Length: 595
Image: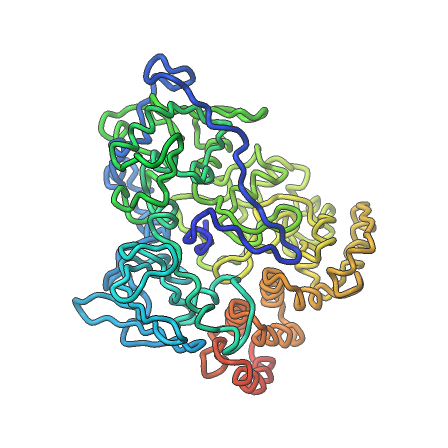
């Protein structure tokens, strides 16, 4: 499970910019929270025999779980979830704070630390006031590490308070071992050189506070505080499935923070309440998924999956879903995962997400929503593959053939897909790599048809052309009719999304796409090929106008040649003239190296 960092950090209220081939998506409450009068045994709909597991006092911490669940506890110790957030220390900070500096767009960022002293980040230049931050927390340990801190010099950015912990605008890319602005980590804005990497662009991001964003998904906190925020996605379970004693829950919130200027329910505590003071653990631990386990751990009370108690009950309101509180029930499991894997952002025309961290939203919008649980493919106690785009896990393919038994054998799969299983699996066709991950494109979790006409109409990536980048959408449409008897009738307006012609290759169209996500998908596809032409095309993306595209292309080339490209070979943060001079030497050498 991977988190799209920046969407979480800026808070789920942020909407992504609409680009060609992508559509904006805004979560809407499907129905109002059910208000139930009265608290306790007479409150209808509540689990009268279940202990509360949502209040601060219901949580006990991961060590209480270790005695009976030693194997899961030990696995969790190695899981990136545990270190998703950490307090800054010699052991947790991975970036170079040894008086390192980065100059970009007229701004200089300096990273400093001496033994026994604070970690600091100082930003100055570019016409902006000097600001300095004392680093308090780290975010991430596998691919990139971001940093949050409090202002110790200068004026806060935008609406932040002086004491707010905010995410600083530079992070450490672990594999490349260098500092980059966070605009290079995710597709935020186009531009090149000094004109693009202006002070305004470089310093534009630090507006996300830990208390209003990161804390809710990168740490463990009592479920009560998810109920108290305006962002209903943070509840995991849909409002239609919730029965709440809102008066009692408001009273519980009032016991830990002032609600005088926050009427009604939910009171919307997200912006005004420092939830970090109420964390069960820094980082994600057992009770993020299992909820407050004090009664189970100390009193041996029967365990129930999902939130419950005298003030709340959860029951499925949708036909076809069952209320069993078991680890095998997709409704309960996916509701638990949806607490964090449901951030707000942009989606392609068919509803597939352009960025990760929205896997739960994608899954529930796809064809298998009520039949498959996140845990059918992912063991929440074990860390996933170190390489995000590694080979398919046979257990994940088996999750498909469990229901689609007709395609369980290699022979039947080959007949259905017209490809050998080693060439294209169920996942390649129905969960293609079209979603931006931390290092490269990863699988969409919207299980759907390989080629949706809406994707063709907008020039968005589709499963067929992700593998066949040298083919056109016209070829894809013909193959669908020939091999699967699926007739797609293109409309004249579609050509505009394909550089004026449906005979344009996917590679050419996505290379020129105004949607940066399409270019990242192309990078992933080219990175998996082994021919000289694909390497040259991949290298050309090192000259892309957007910093994130250049950074992702450098990573893809590094995976192909078996080493990371250093700034002496290609500096993705350099101005265009300097980069082009480097590319003139680099590209011929790359095409001769191991591919």
